[in-house]
Image (tube, rainbow, N blue to C red):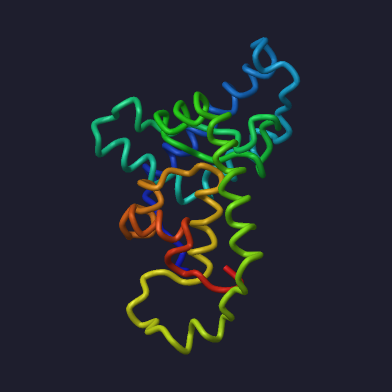
Length: 192
């Protein structure tokens, strides 16, 4: 993949966002009863460095600015697993609307993920997966817009609750293709 280049203004805005978010996270874990027991296990500099390297955060900022700064599209920090603290491996950036929806439907979401995993395991046990070589022999890859690494990233993003709309923008494909990849109707072969 090629490395994306950002303007100085975008970098400054993301740095400013990361600094503010870090202090808000720090304030939450110290002062809010709801966050008792939640740890902030990264330093300010680690968090800022993580934010500056996160392409999805830049995409969220662009979408937010292009919308005229609509609140539901504002970038926020989300803990992937709400039972764990604020650590680099448990943080992702979502829109305010997606983060809010995830928070209110977390239990329903977790139940749905559990059911989907059980169905996938049942399906996998009932039929052998296609070998990787069969896929490459039988498909024309020249028309593919994604590579294997991107498909794996999409599936991980869907498992962690990342917005299909944002992933569609990031990979320049349709939301329906994102959903078909997640449902294994596309890119369905051994190893993916």
